[in-house]
Length: 615
Image (cartoon, rainbow, N blue to C red; front, side, top):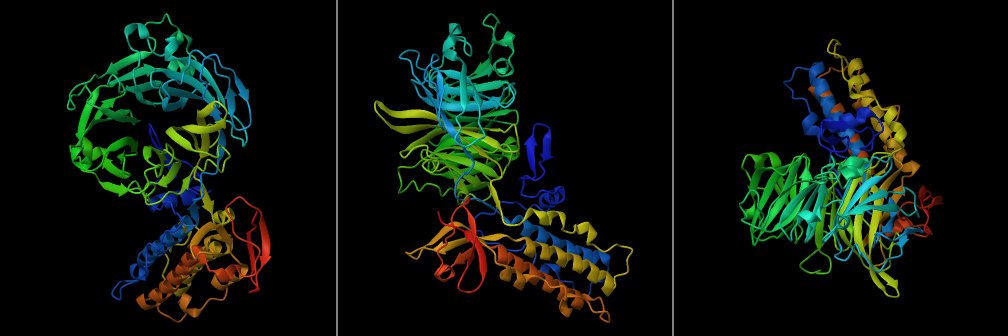
């Protein structure tokens, strides 16, 4: 399960309110019932339990345990409805913050500007002569600042990245050191890089560098640079940065050699290296000190696919291929020698058979939400739900954020938890076309923040007014009479009314002039729609057990059936709505993506709708 908790080195802990609920009770219930707030536009909603599940058999003895068991299923349906009242935004990662130029020289001086930080390059000491290959974020001792390690083809650069959580603001990237100045790599011992492919950190001061030019993995101790340790930074300190190294060109089955290393990732104190080629691949597993632990033979799964990126998420490992096939493995099973994948999914972001312009680059998982992944292509960054990989729930629209009107080509991505609140600072390095004289392309640091990124369809106030399941159940010492049972049912119906009364809007689309459906945003729900659904104070006799009726299977099933029907009505209220042309007939208003102004509108039908005004 995801969202209510995040993984830490010591285990899992809850993050209150992070799954769309502000109350700990609903967070815990959603986690207990295994319900995710992972709804995306177009999902088919269905109740987990139907009338057959809650019906009482004629031969069952009616007691508090039997009734409470059925009430628990009805309550699970109710919590499911609440989780589906939050939907992932599908019109982009809105919380975009800005971009910065990489300094091309140690001697450049930053000049602040809107969205960008400009540098005046010097003709010597170029840092980006082989281009940026990979980045890695790790904590810095300075509050509100992250250490950003940048790898070019043959250099490591350590920067301080201070994100600005305001729109139209630039970020401060200051250079600390580079391997060219012999602070990260001791070139006197012939440890210069030849062709860096990937860098990752373990967030404990360890930096791993994969050099595919030499087929070597280096581990450097950068704690001194991120924690301000002057002794470790001193050039006179023996072995001040390099901890250990492993590898050279050799046999694919070797524990300490690499044939053709493709990618690597660090997860839970382990380093996983993807090695091989020509349909013969291995995953080599090492500990934090690059001591060999295991080798996974995955060749049978890549006869038709070419792997390009590896990443881990909770207890699973994922490998992304050039064609967009995402193959998932259970790490525990692989440790036991079972290398068969548990899932193989075809991503639908890029149709590589027909669109050769866009291609897959990398996959990276959120560090605070194990149900969120970011897939990088050479055109954009897409946000996806791990258990719903058939379509993205967001992407970065470079043009929308005024970054450029031309091409943006992402190269690499990394993320780190925010200092100020629950969420992520996501950094993307990209090549960008620049329409200026004598400057065709530049390398930018693009930054956006991301959290739950959910659109909530209910007023949050309902959460404090719902009745908890423990206060609905019948006490084992109570005699099950019509009065006792009706009291429990009244509380269940109260919760349903809370859902009806607090529904603000529903997800909606419209028919375009060409007859196609287009998703514009949300439609506000009219008071008349709610009035038709609301369970009135004077209820039909079928919803209660009459004073003179027996509490038996027939009367219970009648009541349960009515409650199920009311839950289905709530499901129909919150499911996606396709509004026909007649809905907007003679109306000057159209729905549009958030955030835009909201106005009151009266349609020809006489209903009053709160809908969004077109710009």
